[in-house]
Each structure stands twice: as structure tokens, then as C-alpha cells.
Image 1: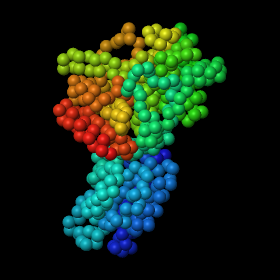
Image 2: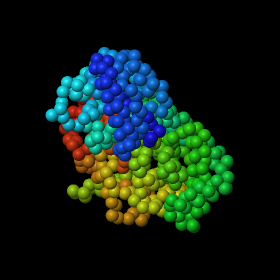
Image 3: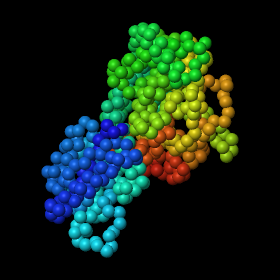
Image 4: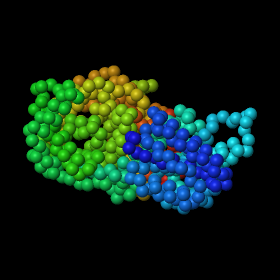
Length: 489
């Protein structure tokens, strides 16, 4: 995450004299250095000298705009910086924008406070002046208030950085589509042009014949090397290795195609397997483990979303996967969802070392494919779904509690995640369906709803959250109000 740079731009003016301006620079530099040393701040903070004129403000903004590694700007008014000076600079800003509302000193020095101190430490009203102009020109931004060394302030700032880094990577993400989406399915459709305009996702189509042809180029040595890598990650029965070796060839071929085209995400479709002997199973699971985004049945939006949440959670463990709401446990007072898929759940969410199983699939009409089977870890998580509402993209997020799976499923050889949606399965399911959430989603243990809300706001897409506070009647009103607001944009 340290490759992403965030510029700290501090505002002031020439009114207060050189000594005050020198102290502004010293204080803001100390904040930048402290942020860079903080474990909660995942990215790099670049300090700039304080800006005092419209020209200096515009120059700082253009410097950030021109820096290809800059993922956003952080702006703070140490003193009072008249906000008309900021109009040209903010109007030209093309990076995500965080307004931090803090002050260098935590406490008021009651015994020594004087006018010099007051002239220097004016954030309480300087940031309000700055906030007005951003609101006046309708500039999308996040505001975080609090003392700059407070753990809550640092945690919120770090989470916003992850959202901005997600936008940074999203805008250069390419999705490799192998075949099209599953026939007659609505929710996996979508406007690819709108997705590229809003999120930067470029989608390119390939046929299964392209994958089959690439597999012909994979040498026995390459496949054997991939199989050896599997042995270090999964439990494999030696009797199953011939079948697993075929998945190794699929993965090697997919990896060649992904790397050659610069793709970060991809999908397959079990309805279109011409030229393949097995549905890609272990191959795509392992590629997800390595950080690629994936979704089944031609769901390019979820594949891209999985890749994005994996990148946003870099350094936190990377526990994220493509998942599908598969079936319910409706025991009164203990209602749960079993999330799974035919084959393709990422091993990053496994509670223990996965075992590879070779079993008939019952769908797709091909040989029994190898797949990694495991129970998922317990912990708090979010599931996220991106849907096309026709006039806008909508990101729907549900907070969930993943729980330990106490029972084995000897006749169901798939990876599974058992979770309790908040506030309850009944309310969460009703809210999810009312909002048009898909049956496919991206699940992350490392991100929360706040990072995904920031991501949606920076991207300019609608955000809907289902959590412990959700009430269906209020939720219906929220959807109606949101629909009215977005239709007017």
C-alpha cells in the first residue's frame, strides 16, 4: 500500500507574518511524518509547504494531478485561508479529496494562550471557511474531524486511504471475459460503458477456444511446476493428481493470458466449456488466492469487485472471495446463510489448509473437476454486490457475522461460508431483495462498510448499506428517496 501517495496540503495566508507561516510548515510537516510512521495509515503521505495564494494552491493541485502515484489529497487549514483563493485549484482537482479537520495542539494552554497562539491555531474556523467553498462548488469529499493523534481519527483516515487506493486501481482495471454471461440471467448483465466511465473497468471478451488454444502451449514442465505449488498449499490425494494436473494446465494458461493482457480479473461460464475437459475449479480458486478477481457465470461486475476489495485490503490479510447465497438454515433464533458455489470460492477465507477433492459436478457435462474444499473462518465481514439500475450503478453492502461451521457436509464437496446477516436474516434478506442485490457478491473479512461507502462516493455511484440499524419501513423510504435523488442527477 505504500506505493500510493497522498499529498498533505495545508492552507494559510500572508496576513500572519513569516514566523507564523514557518510554524505552520513545521507543524504540518510533523503531522505528515507522524502519519507516515503510524501503523493505521497504510499509504505514504507527501508533505507540501503551506499554500498562501491562489497560484500556490493551483500549483499544488496540479502537482498532485500530474503525479501518477498520487491516489488522493488531504487538505487542512492550520490558520484561516480565505476560500475564494481555493476555487480555481479545487475546480481543477482530479484526485479523491479528504478534508481533515484537526489542530496541531490537543489542549488549550490556558495559562499562556495569547493572540499569537490564536493567530496560529485557527482550524476551528479556518476549516469551516474551507468547508463552505467545497460545499458551494459541490465537490465530492470526505471530512474527518478529530485530533490527529487520536486512534479513531487515524483509523478513519487509513480506511479512507484504502477506498481512494481502490479507486486508483479500479480506474486501470481490465477484466478478461471468457465467454458471455449465463443465458437469460438478468443481474449479471450491465452497461460496460457506464462501468468504464464511472469505475474505469475495461472489459474484453475471449472465447473458450482462446483458453483451450493457450492450454496447448502449456508445457508438461509448466504444468508439473504448478502442481508442485499446489502441493504446498493444499492437501492432495496422490490418486487425484492426474485430474489436478489438468487444473494446473488451466491455471498456467489463464495466468499467461492474464499477464499478457494486463488483466486483474476474469470470469468463466459453465454453459460454455467447448474445448475444455473440466470446468475451471481449483485453477480459478488458486488465482483468486494470488489476488486476481473472479466470478462465475459471466459475472464481470462481481469479478472486478472481488479484485478491487482484494487490492483495498492489501496488507490486512487479503481474505476476500467471490461467493453466492446458496441456501438457508432457518432454525428459529439461529437463522444463517450458507454461502458457496459449485467450485469457485477463494482459499484465502479458509479456516485451515484446504483439501482438494475430485467429484462429479452434475452440471456442465464435463469430467469431474478438482476443487479446493474447506470451511471458512469465523469473523466479522461484509458482502457487497454491484448492480446496474439502468440509470446508475448501485453498490449494496450487508454487514455479516461469519460463524464456525460445526457440521461436516460429506456429500457436498464445495467450500462454504456460514454467516448471520445483520440485523437478522429476515430483515437483511428483505432489504437485499428490495434493493435489487444480486445472488453473487464479493465477501471481505478485512474491509468494512465505511471503506466501501467512501469508494462509492469517490466513484460517484449509489451506495446502500444493510446493517444492525436497518429497519424495513425506514429502508423502503431510504430507497425511494435515493431513487428520487439519483433520477434528478
